[in-house]
Image (cartoon, rainbow, N blue to C red; front, top):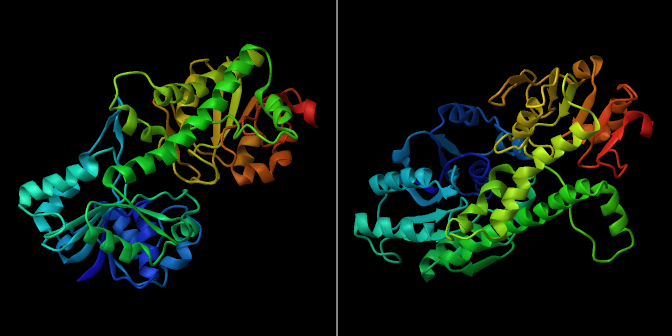
Length: 418
């Protein structure tokens, strides 16, 4: 028997599993990706998340692709992916597949915890399916709660221990069972309803998405009026107590790019959330237009540094950089060179229009470059900024949307800052 079974050992489930094992729970991961299972069995942490490779080496836990293991778990935590369909409709295929396995292998008395981000009403949907198909009663025959993860990728170890845990429940015993688990790692456990917990998670992510849309819109407005948004933001915030938060940049990823849809799909009208989505999705083409206005892309060699969806991550899910590259390809450049220090050299990026290989930065810098784009502000680029810039021709155009160079300019020539 296991204290806890975690369904899905990806970027949400695996860190949680390791932390729970560290706290003395007998845990098992249930994962359909057999390659992932084999790597975890070898105690190889399969993605970039500081602190976990050291932890995984010495902890005791089990990992399996055998879904019948669900019947041996006192608590079941669901951490499978929850993507959206192309038309802003929530995709419940992963959750539904898990429910079918729970219906097949579960037994009375088990506690089920949803942890993946879900659309409003999903926890009720799971409750209703179990009650209908198994003829069980919530609070008597089984227990269920929604306990959303709210960690920042790349900071999971610290935040699993430091963030309060929201617990959405309908009965006291479900709350007790969830609290017994999360009080071992969280400083505070906060009770709310199913829908309250679902909305809190969506509010956390969607608010950030909207904030980023505002400054991305400021970039578009500044371009129209012939101003540089980074220069304006620096001056606007200097000595001013009510600063404009954030600065423009590629805003996407596996959470921000989809979570707003879990609210917006319920309403037929265009709202502030769908407007924010439109702005953030338009940023790549707006940036390409800015480049092309200053240095015609046709026939030029373009170097793009950074491919992942965020700084210092190896996660390509929902990155906007492939979209950005497709808009550049529409301008007929002579060549596009790409580099990301967090991906393997030789990694093939399929943009849909062209397959590009991740090349060593040194190799890229040896060749001709007319335009260089710091697409993602990885620490390696920040620390090596001047070593990169001094290797370029003085007339090369630099696109620096994240202000890596600290010049408070989105576009500038190399000769202007050396």
